[in-house]
Image 1 (cartoon, rainbow, N blue to C red):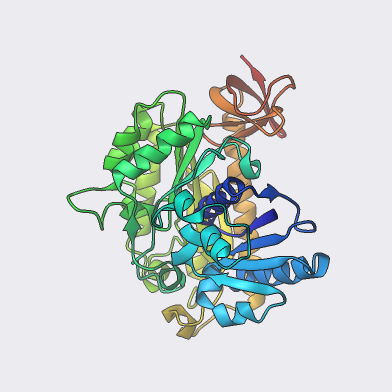
Image 2 (image 1 turned 90 degrees about the vertical axis):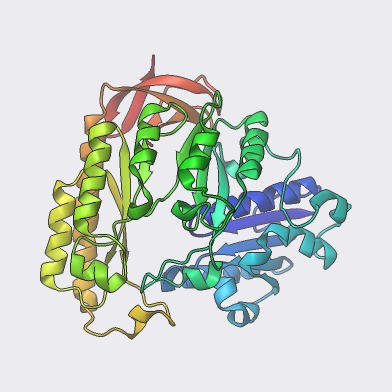
Length: 422
């Protein structure tokens, strides 16, 4: 049986899809292009209207280029609009997010994929994986490990709490066991991810928090842990100090700002101010001078005035942020923001988005230039002519190495990004 997995959206979806890959491989599946696959899994996102549209277009494309394929759809769009997804061409199964850990066994029981002792293989719903895992699965050198899912934050624009449910954390012992499993399989970088990663442990017995998990993971040899997106209110002094002092953690933070106007942040129901955010990232830059600091920005939120936008642009220009993902505001039906009025005109939103993207590019160039002549530990990727540093610089390097090797590299050029082995 030949399979293909198409993934949209966040690192949580990437982690889920890597689990599908392992499960298919353990069942004897053979990875293939969508044109040749017997089963195509489309793991959807629904954070914006364009994400929904991209999923629909992909499903229609799969049906067009491979009408014999059985299309299985999961993820946030499939969870939010299952009937809409079922009506798309050649969709044979819609699997909600809560059933993702058992997606391949579900398909086996339904006769959609060969069933190789499913009950013995998969156990009781834990989604654990066997010997199929190794660096290079799904083209990925790093392993994305989901330690939490769900979110209870009341952000006025976000539909994800209704598609991912309330916060649920993986027990510390289970996380440690999974980390040790993938390290033993040869992975040297592990990205820790969750829908609301900073809420890790809030649903577990005892006073468990994310810093407890990070400290439990610390000290493992020959592996780098990369912490995925953290909400600003969850990035504590203890986490910053741990990253600053431990070689086991990448000097890389992703801290979604969303906006720099306190009025807009309040309308978004974001539980911090721009002053809090600025103090946070300034502390990171002071403690970890070479740290990468990424962020997310929403432009054109209902009620965003010219003055609000100038607060955003002005702050970013002078901030230590190293790159920003920019999203024009997108209505999500059923959210409080969808009922808000006083919308900026579409042309204004396009112009504001362009301006913030230009600022982001200047910040990224400035950071890359600041790193020239610095030396970093890096992991080789792909065919060995690319390496990624802890602070997330992807450097072109001379050929001669294979994928998944640690090297020390000196940054020799910012544009294009390249380095030499030292």
